[in-house]
Length: 438
Image 1 (cartoon, rainbow, N blue to C red):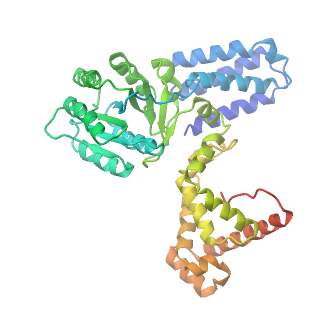
Image 2: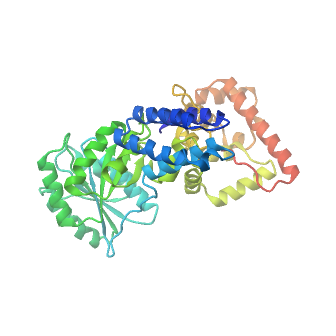
Image 3: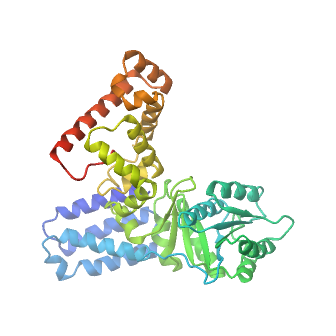
């Protein structure tokens, strides 16, 4: 996410820190480079211009020029303005005083509305809320069945009403949610390949009838300024309350995310970071600005870890680590926790200093983890608990069973022994905190 943008900003900051003293000239040069980076990322021209003007006005002040570390001061100013550009603070979902809370999801066809509805239901479920997914898209073939499948994957309830209009379906769904004692209704409305009056009329009628607490506009983050222009058209007719950017795990240059709040006046509330039902992040402007500038996002990384780590297992593992008594079964458990946190490429971007350091043509080796998992699963329970019993014939069997080579298995066992030896040395020193595998 924003990998190219992050790399470009880090190059600019490296040059900026190289100046012993900042002058109006080298600040102007830096701002020209920043402007070029923003425009190449498909940021709205007016938004980019206003951003550069705001940074220049603050950066050319005497307080910055007399600073001991002027370059860092300018970076801080760029960070603050970027946070402001992205919305300033995160905006929570509105809730109804009397359940159910009604969330209306709108957008063009193909933007990922139906998938987002499932992700949102899963997100709410993790916060002890029960959602009803409503099939109000009666235009697209198989849309109702798609939402039914999505609802099953998200562990949410589903509502449809054959031989009815979208308006009738939405009205009936609120009563159905009350009968089932569900606290949230998510309306998956129809989209079109382009904006037309029939679509807007239908959505306006649903809005008037259901009085939704939230209207979320779903935009494809890979379409850049097209997403921003479409959002403008929708807000003029429906005055939606928030934006969701999908497909942000792909080759998104960042233009939509950096422009849409300023152009529409509506906050970004969620971003989709993958195809899986749990690949949804609540949008935090300050965290996103930190990621874009290559400063990482440790808070989100810790939150992801907290969601998947069993604290009792963590304490047991720590005890084993202290005694250098952990096995390949423990290693496998840690591997599963890592996989639940999301793709490695996204996790790497959350680590300060690594966001823009990985070249565009080099991907994080996800296959290496799959190979390790296959090798461990090809072992017997005894072999996982006591790897030292794995002799030559066993190694050959495990390698064949996992589709790997004996050399790869030898490498894994050697790394395991080295890690075990290192933990034993640390345990002797009596350190209180021991590092986890990942």
